[in-house]
Image (cartoon, rainbow, N blue to C red; front, side):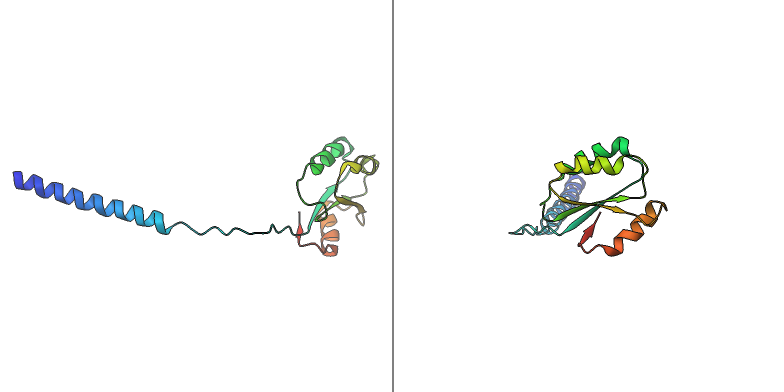
Length: 131
């Protein structure tokens, strides 16, 4: 009986050693090297804000856009008007002065909806990233 207990403890010890060594080796070799860049790279970005009759929330959109922390010479904001018939354009002209970014107001070809407005403007953009 004593020998059976010793064999049993040895087997449990072997399993524990295998499990612990596997876990330790997996932990050591699974760490990936993190690349640290000396210089931050900021690509040029275009932010498109399509709108149609959104005078109620346009001021809030401009305030939220002004809070973006990105280099001002690398971000361009395009307000894409789908022929609004309210005061949205006037609100943009008045409120967009708080933006530190370049901005444009561009009119879509016709009142055709958001997807057609985006299809109209995206081929004309030259920046690396479009949001």
